[in-house]
Amino acid sequence: MNRSSAVPAAGPIPDVPDVPRARDDFPILSRKVHGKQLVYLDNASTTQKPRAVIAAIRRYYFTSNSNVHRGVHSLSDRATQAYEEARGRVARFLNAREDREIVFVRGATEAINLVAQTFGSGHLREGDEILVTEMEHHANIVPWQMVCDRAGAILEVVPVSTAGELDLAAYERMLSPRTRLAAVTHVSNALGTVNPVREMIGMAHARGIPVLVDGAQAAPHIPVDVRELGCDFYVFSGHKLYGPTGIGVLYGKAEHLEAMPPYQGGGDMILRVTFEKTTYNAIPWKFEAGTPDIAGAVGLRAAIDYLDAIGLAAVSAHEGELLGYATEEVGRIPGVRIVGTAREKAGILSFVAEGVHPHDIGTVLDHEGVAIRAGHHCAMPLMDRLGLPATARASFGLYNTPAEVDILAAGIRKAREIFR
Ligand SMILES: Cc1ncc(COP(=O)(O)O)c(C=O)c1O
Image 1 (cartoon, helix red, strand yellow):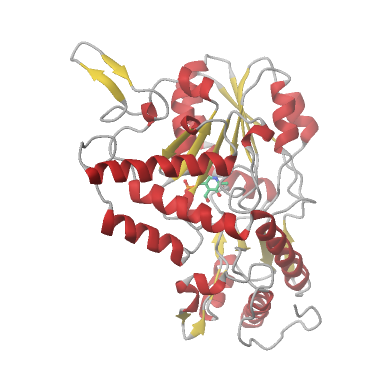
Image 2: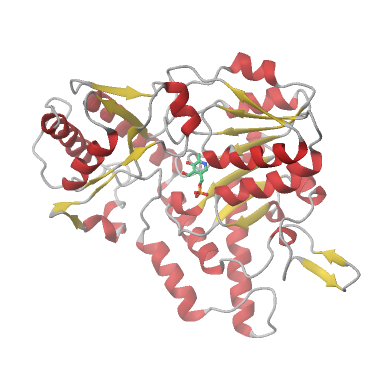
């Protein structure tokens, strides 16, 4: 790691010692963009896919494609087996008690909407409260606003400090007798803050309040054990975890899922239908109306196998190193300010540069082959709180290297020069 010079030569990207297999496993990383080697630092938006995931999806379509839970023929059996095995793999990944606590959905957004529309709407009365935080992604705000509006309930918001940390004392105070659910992000997508969700769940449960944890930015980076956390719901998206788009996970404690009404109606979620009455299937299928993303589940399973083989502890340590190095290198560029300086952070670096709009930083970096995100990161209320219209955000994955951080820092310096 070159910590001594601010703008080192952008030579070949070295191996990552802690996660040595990583780079070659991702075909897209050898691409060039604008004639430059791709440096992909937009992992919080979506991650790239390893060969193992691409191959698993291809293999599924080559050898097993059929519909699930329906046919009496061999291919349907194979597809059903692959789909249900993927569910079991996710259950082990999260250390869920039972496979039936895992519902396949399109992603974190759909998972939260499912809980809001079923658990939420069933429990909400006028004057009840749903507690979220100021650092939530829109996916963990808008679904709650929608059900609150319908029920006449109130969305309460826990404040964050300028550093990007939750005010835990305020959180505890705001857990009121009227709170029906707390919905909190595990890791902030805009700032990288890791919230003390275990402690927060303990505080809520002490008052009999269930907790949904948005793990979209946590599950790919830190080991998650839903039983140890004790959360009532945990959600994440496959595509941020080196898996395909279109598949995600809702973990819910069996007793909650059993008590919740279905989300959507259709095939697969029923036991018997007459025009007079329909009886619903058992969990988790009660929540999986219609043909699911079978290939997506197969791809997600391959992604989890891949990630587990490397080890989330190693991934987490590697990304922590990169974040530390990037914070140092980007933070000492004149006129650049790091946004989000919480004590506990995962691999996300948000920053602003004096005199340069984040979009312009993004455009200059793109011409250097560097992919970052610039904007409000679907966290407009947080940007309002911080008094910023937008930030530039570099987010790290298991395949990123210190040399790529050097290229990022050099690109930011270049943007500063151009817009001086
Ligand atoms: C914290 C957080 N929650 C939820 C989401 C929504 O994920 P998806 O768009 O995959 O449903 C995101 C996506 O960026 C996120 O970062």
